[in-house]
Image (cartoon, rainbow, N blue to C red; front, side, top):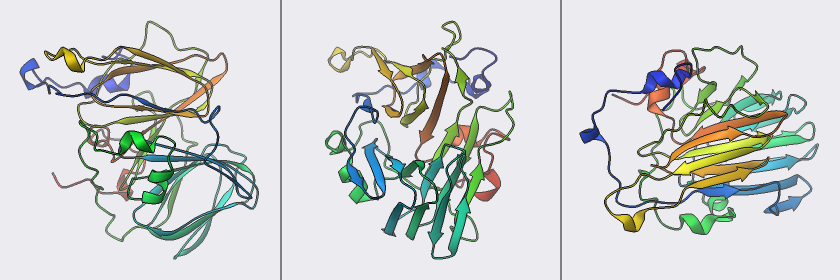
Length: 303
């Protein structure tokens, strides 16, 4: 349910109630409150927190100048968010080294790679659970010891015709009211870097909606948010869940599982910056002309 001015209102189809998916079990939300939890790693490279969903592992680092974050035998493409304009990194792969400025996203190919901090700053890396070492290191790893009941097994999207290479994109693009956020995708992730909201969200313009079969990771980079979740009532009362109103400061993540009805309200008086993350990429967002800013670099799945 969206207000008419929300670009996502055009996503709503004409499915009848008989086509609605009925779930037989539910799975709860997960929080990674990096601002109050102890980091998983503290070393010369900086401080690093790790938390996960079913299909994504979020690795949040306060990197030190000169710090290095390396992967030796990375099994698949991973994503990098450099949220601050003042931060600069150098990413090295088998194809060479590239300096990537702040306020950017980058997609790093499989194999060996190193991210070197040319300045201190925040670095957010996104991995699939194929990176087993990171998945096991997550603070909430036990919650995902078994498969999620409503999320299909992860399946990567097609590679570009020329193969996977390092790609990076600036987040400094003009806002467009016909487009929802700033969306980039690769074979493993879709990142939607939403427009920053100054001040609390209007309570008469929220957007409760649900996803049938994919989870959403909402990454709070600045400000504070309340994630509101409600699970549909079905005929089996044994799986009903209480509503949740999860207040989170920054930095943090909230994993929103399907089919929870959800919406998020910004709370702080200052700048509230949220990033929505999906793994694999969303087909509905990808189908909207002009929404995915790097659509030409990554093909869609067949059909």
